[in-house]
Image (cartoon, rainbow, N blue to C red; front, top):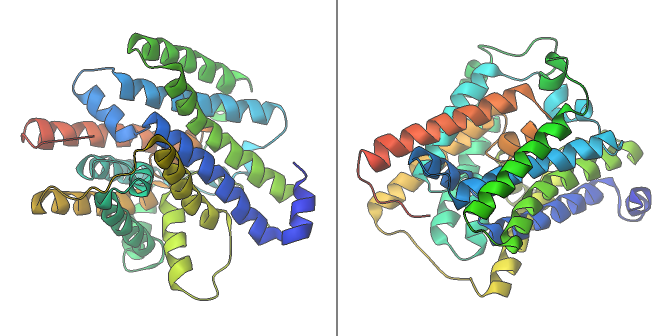
Length: 354
């Protein structure tokens, strides 16, 4: 792809938005067809079952690592230039935000990325939850919740003015990331076959991971030819959801990768569901479920912004380049989700559906 030619034809900002749209569409199609969902994987794990949802999540997680680390070894991107690696991270934010996000995705019955995919198929519950998520994320980014987020984030930050590169901190060879990804991918394929998942679903699960690599490579390529500074980023839904919401509410906003990403996911998931005949209007099953979902969405909005990313942004995109706080956030998301499922859905006896 001749990125310079695209920039010269349509400009830098529209190119960034176009790359977000491409990344989002790949993600949306693959996530809809594979039923990728961290929340579903954590619930399986909490109930002592390494089933199909866990297999799909692990395959996405590992293939993202393989694609991204492979791209870096080929010189198609540099992890140290990525925004989430080049700026200070917050350990306190990753811990508290991760726990809140994990709790929220169980209550809302889906992480932020999953809600966006479901909304595209006609799930009105996900539309409402997604809007609550985006509003609270924006409040945490630049609104009433900003002081609280900054106070928690400032308790414990990474040293040296940047985030921690796990591989560099452990003095591991450059190929370690790719090797770990391949080992985890082999385990995921084994579990997938054990759970009798078809080849098509495996392909689509790995496609979600591929979308993450596409985002990294495209934004890095754009940064090499653009006159103005370009953020090197990939799939995540906390900040982009807030930015997309404001794009449609505030005049004179500018195009960027985020503005293309969220509509791209929605469009990709819609087309995939329409092709499969899976478009169906769905709503809340009662006031209690609506209240639960809105509380969960709010927890995800604040928690994701505090943690520096959502289940995708920190849990797949950040970990694929071995950002230290992303690994902590992902671990805490698992802890928060497992604890919430046990205390609310298992011990509390609440009904839970996928």
